[in-house]
Length: 489
Image (tube, rainbow, N blue to C red; front, side):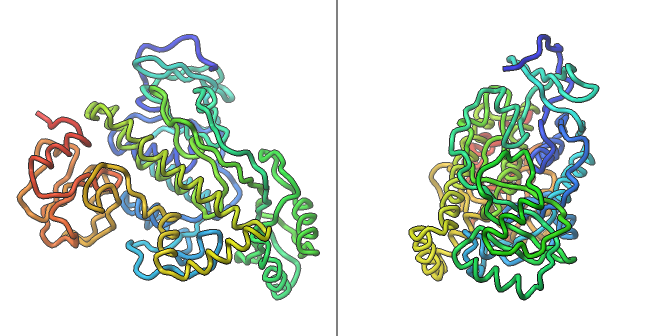
C-alpha cells in the first residue's frame, strides 16, 4: 500500500470520500444530514462535458423522493414506461406496480451528478476538484490520506473514515488490497450519440432486420437530429481510450453493410462485459461503494442505481458511527446487506448478456423466456429485480414486509416520503399507543390510525426499509436499540 509517513494527531474531517460521481455525491449529502464533516475528492477538474442519458429506476426515484430531490430531477428528465428492462425483451409493464413512481426516468448523467453535488454542497459538504487519493494509512482512530493533483501533491489530510467511490479502477480499493474477483471483458460494445445522414425509414428498416438476431445493435432517434448508436466492437480494447467516429463507421459497415452516414458525434464511448465484485466492502476505517465495489455490463441500466442505493444504505450507518450512537454491529450490516444485492445484479446482468448472444442456444433461451414473460408473475419478478423494489434485507424471521422498503403510502400529513427528508428513522404508529421517546433525537414518531398500512405499527430506517412490525412497546424498544443505539439520557 502506498502510504504517507506522518499522521496529523486530530481529524480535520469525519469522512473523506474519493470520487464525486453519483455515489460519492449522494453519500456526502446523506452524511451531511447528520452534521458529519465531509470532504469529497474528485480527480477531474471539471464535470464531464458529454451528455450521456441514463435511467433512474423505480427504487432510485423513491429514494430521491425520500430526500425531496425528485422534483428537481423530473424537471430535467423524461418519463418512460417501466418495461422492456430485462435483456431488452419487449414486454409491457405489469399492472399495479407497488410504487407511486412506477416509471423509468431518462436523464443526462451530468445533470444527475450536478444536482447531487449541489445538494451535498448546499448541506455543507466540501468538494475539492483536481484532487485524488495517492495513498493512505489507517490506525485505530482514523485515516491519513495523501493527496495527488496539481498544487496538492504530497499534502496529507486526516479523517475518521475514508470511503472509495472512485469507480471500477478504484485507487482506494487497490491500495486497500481488496480482491476484485470475477471475469474480464470478453465482448465490447461501442456506444455514442451522433447525427445520421441516411433517411429515418431506411435506418428503421435496417435496425428491425438486424435486431432480429443481434441484440447488441441499434440506432434510436434521440431528438434534435441525433441518434443513440450501439454496435458490437471488433474486439476488446483499453476502455480508457475512447473510440473514434471512424471506429463506429467501420463496425456499422461490418454489421449492417452501411455506416448510415453517421457524423457530428456528441460523445463516443465503449463498454465491456467485465463482471467483478469486491471480496469485502470494509477494512477497518476504509469502505467501498458504487463501482469501486462492483462492476458489470450496463444491460438493464442498473449500475448507477446500484451505487446510489449503496450510498443510501451506508450514509446513515456511517453517520451513526461518527456521531457515537451506532450499535456495535450497525456498520457491519452495510456489507451484509449490500454485498448480496450486488451479487444478484451481477448474476442478472450475466444472464442478460447471454440472452444478447446471436448464437442458437442463447437465442432459443431468449425465445423461451419471452414466452414465460407473458405470465404476469414472471414479468413482475424480473421488473422488480432490475428496479430494485423486490429487495428484502435479511433482518430475521417475521412478516413478509420485514426488511423490505415501504412504498410512498398516504398518511395524514400527505405522503410518507415527505416525512423522511431529514434522513431520520420513523415510527409509524397506527395504534397511537407506542412511543420512541428515548430516541427522539434520531427517530420521528407519527401516530396515524388512518395510514394506508396493513400492520399496526412499523419502524422505518432512514433508508426506508422496515426494521420492525408489531404493537408491543418492549419489542419496539429492543428494535430501536438494535438499529438506533441506546436511548438518550
